[in-house]
Length: 345
Ligand code: KG4
Ligand code: ZN
Image 1 (cartoon, rainbow, N blue to C red):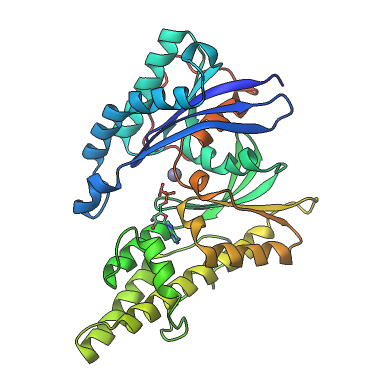
Image 2: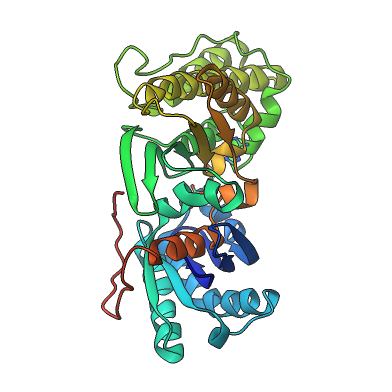
């Protein structure tokens, strides 16, 4: 393949992002710039992402992020080869903002436009940083998603299973709220759990009795609620040690479920070597989860790749890279490209 410079745009949740990625002729890639403008502070008072506020912020910030990304990459719109944009799934107002912005840029510059699935962006990220061959096993775990994928090619994914209710990140956030820890819940639970006893509360490991790699996290959250209430009833409140023990017990349950379901997913991985287990999404920042998954990979004599955190969470470099990879196998989209709130891989 020839080398390509791609401008990527991402605005499907609460991060406005633009990036420039260079795909080389040898198949490797480098991130020339990656600008991410988060909205955490805008939504903090509401205890979750407010779609209307998110859409407005994306519409306001996209142009600026694009300009920054081009400047930081030391390039211009006329020097890039194509534009890739998240066309779904996600909060529709944000996705529409991104798609409209990308169409304007494509029309003005005459460059080809590629609508990219946000989940494909996450799923292809390991190849952006490491030389991971297809097919590889991907566990995608974030605040909104949780699924096992067999990644067979840039636009070829087989879903092996996933959550039937909440995503793990959502469970981390809700449990943090239940036990009085700050948002986002993932990092605060992880650090609080360090001084806790993971065996103090016997929490369930949902769906481990069921075959396959489907998961469930909402019952686990309810079990934490009951354990908390029992402590509060007995003592009138939670001590820091109670919080730490609840955090550690919850995290241990999530780790056990993800590790065991990953073992089941390996059973569906073709035996041909080399095999690689990859992880992406915000929850992949969790060190206990990373360590457990690495152990599973070793047991199956597979490699383990966890991209750097900045590329695990939402960003536009992954969208630029996915669009560039896909452009080698399919035609561009035209100006009828639409934003899709739901778009399973
Ligand atoms: O991928 P991401 O940035 O956004 C989307 O959901 O698209 O993931 C955010 C989620 C939040 O729920 C956050 O609590 C969780 O990732 N998270 C973590 C950790 N860091 C972030 N969960 C567990 N442990 C962490 N260290
Ligand atoms: Zn995401």
